[in-house]
Image 1 (tube, rainbow, N blue to C red):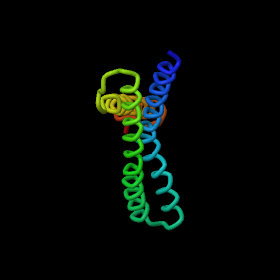
Image 2: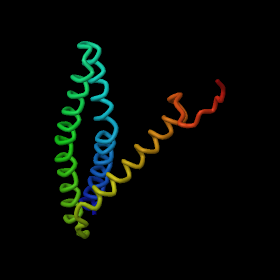
Image 3: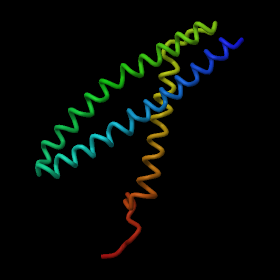
Amino acid sequence: MRALLRMVTGAAALVGIMFAGSILLWVGIPLGWLWIASQIDGATGSVGAAIGAALVGVVASIALMVPVLTWLSNRHRQLRMESGRDDLGHLVLEVVMVTSAGVALVVFALWFFLLSGSSPIPFEVGY
């Protein structure tokens, strides 16, 4: 019974780590490379170099993060099968990715409309 509980706890922990990795994928990597690009632009005065570095950096970072998430998903599948449950394939990773993308989108929308000072609707009408 303890071994089963340990497997279930481990599987739940893996889902949490997958969720954190997915948030990193959607939010952390792009924001990190935007900051790096701003530092490059400030140091060199070249917007092109900053954009190029950010583009290459984001793609490379995502290319490194995807195998990590896949490994976590495979480990989760293995723990599920060891505990006698059905193999759902990568369904858990897919649900985690979609959920984290939704959370990131909602948080971005809240920041944009409430905290950034920007508004797509001009509230001040006057010339």
